[in-house]
Image 1 (tube, rainbow, N blue to C red):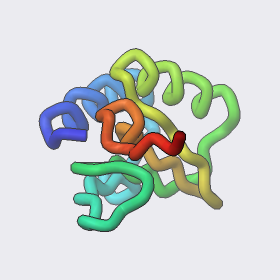
Image 2 (cartoon, rainbow, N blue to C red):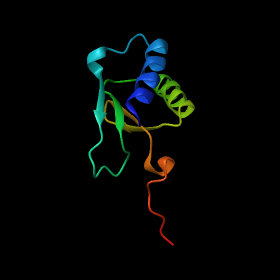
Image 3 (tube, rainbow, N blue to C red):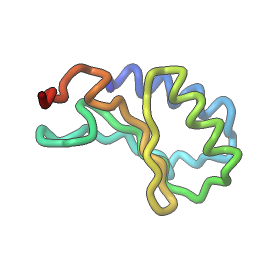
Image 4 (cartoon, rainbow, N blue to C red):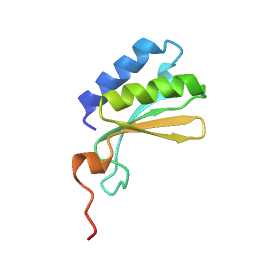
Length: 90
């Protein structure tokens, strides 16, 4: 995703979740060969309850973004198929 899209999404998440700590959030630029996405990804590294995860996923979806869950981490990104960058296999 573009950096300004990430900032917009993060502002909305932050407005709804005052418990997020600044040191728990990272904006990371994808590597050239990243299979998941291109551009930037938001990483939220903290334990988040299921209700908050659902709300964060809803905010991300509203912005056309996807969320991947890892151990004590949510990764918010714009998937390549949305940007039309996945090659189609016949």
